[in-house]
Every structure is written in structure tokens, then in C-alpha cells.
Length: 236
Image 1 (tube, rainbow, N blue to C red):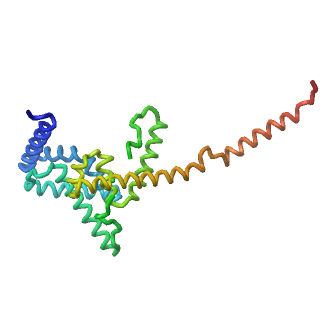
Image 2 (image 1 turned 90 degrees about the horizontal axis):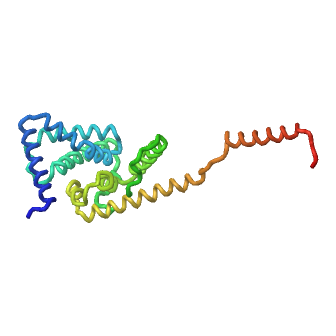
Image 3 (image 1 turned 90 degrees about the vertical axis):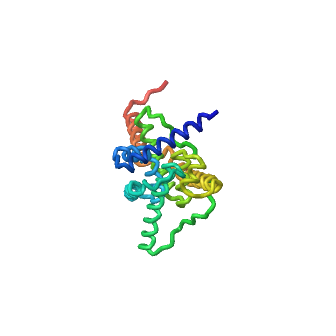
């Protein structure tokens, strides 16, 4: 008896084949649906690779154009998402190589380096203060993520942000599953170390008391003392 997972997989495969058939036949609405379905995940993949929002958006658009022109050659050996992910990565790597040639530098990333955060931001949004705090934390995490080597950064985004499985990530990146696990573990370790360092630095400024705060308290105390000096002295 076919289990639920197998049934879902079969349905998804049929849906993808129908989507491809419609796109090949010139149905732009089907291609729009395809883009909207995968936009966020593919953008995050490009953003993690290029570390630049505008460049990532351009790369994603170029990859989509390439996909539209070549989708007739899609044979279903992998999922559409995996196929699109590889197109996005190819576009991103091409841009990185061109930039490296322009800068005449050797890329720092070693794709063969062996490297493997839990949800860091709660999803409740019951106050503007919490929303602002999450935005600050997200900005810090994105900045620290940008500092990771590309091999670690891309795996982290696919596994921890997009919650892709080890198998899906391995297929997208064309690397062994063991490499996905080790890079993901290493990426999380590096992020924790970096964030812990930021916390250590921030500890020195916790409940900071200086400047206007200090001036205000001193002034208030002196004013109170002056008021007391004006009061007549009484005994008892």
C-alpha cells in the first residue's frame, strides 16, 4: 500500500510535469506561478552566495530567464526546485568568478573545506518593541552570516533558514550528504561563537549609566540638597 509520503511525492511530481508542460507551451501564467512558489527560497540562496541584496536579485532574475529558455530540457531527474537552485548557483558563481577576475584576487572560499542556529527569533509579534528587537537581532544575524565562508553560509541558509532536508540540500549543491551535515554543524558553531563575542562586548554596556542620565541624577540630588539647606533647622 502506498504510504502518504509516497503519494505526496507522486502528486508533486505530476504537478511539476504539468507545470513544465504548460510553460513549454508558452503559458506565462504557469511560469509566474513557478517563480512565486520558489522566489523566497531561491533569493535567499542567491543572497547567501553573493552577500549583496541587489546583486542577488539580479542573479535570480537572470537564472529565471535561463530557466524559461531551457525548461524544455528539464527531464525530471531532480525536482524543479533542485534544478532551479543549480541554475541560481551557476549564475551566482559566474558573477563571483567575473568579480574575482576584475579584482585580480584569489577567492577565499575553499569549496572542499569540511564544515555543519536553532530558531533564534520567536515569531510572536505582540508589541512594536518586540518587533524592533527582532529586527535588530535579524540584522545582527544577517551581518554575522555574511562573514561566514560561502560554503558554510549557503548550507546554513538552505538547512536552517529554508529548512530543507539534508538530502535536498545535497542535491541542490551537488555535494555528499555527509558534507552537508559537517558544513551545517560548522556554520552554526561559527555563528554561535561570533554572536557570543558580540554579547561579551555588549555586556560592558548593559544598564549603561552616563551622560544625560548621570547629569540628571546629580542635578536632582544637588537640587534636593539645596532645598534642604533652605529649610529651617529643627530639633526633636
